[in-house]
Image (cartoon, rainbow, N blue to C red; front, top):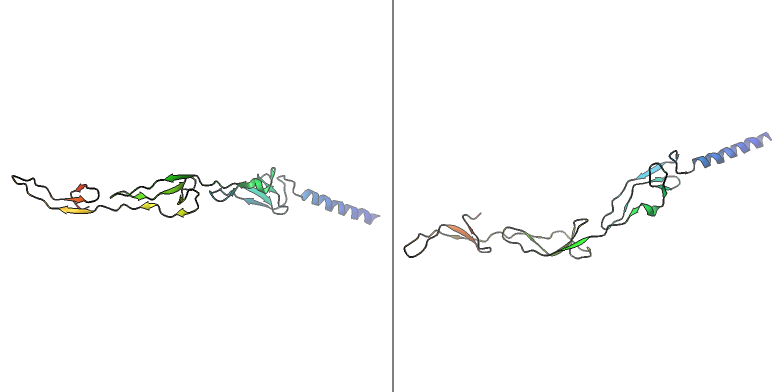
Length: 165
């Protein structure tokens, strides 16, 4: 009978020990907890909130105090999706760059060929082509004709310059 009491005591102690160490969501949690850092959602990829996971029982918590148990789907921040605006083409001139027609996402600042954001563009800039200078020599004024100083004229924009630069 004494052995039965000892055996009963050991079984009850074991059961109670298992019960007390089970995941209960309290800060005294004895299991090893994994902290998952928050991951920001992007235009095309889901993110997650910061959450905590018990390595032993796999329960998830939204707080470090293990007071608020959550499901995995509650950790997900949905992808933002692209927020597109259309940018019309601009012709370059002698001194200013232009650009091709494209779409720009306000969230990720990437450039795309299409409004759905399926074809990303590496470069949308059309470089300025620079002046196309023609040198004009000085001409002395006469009684019947006007003269001029030495200058340069851009054949593209029709502006006049004192030097080639």
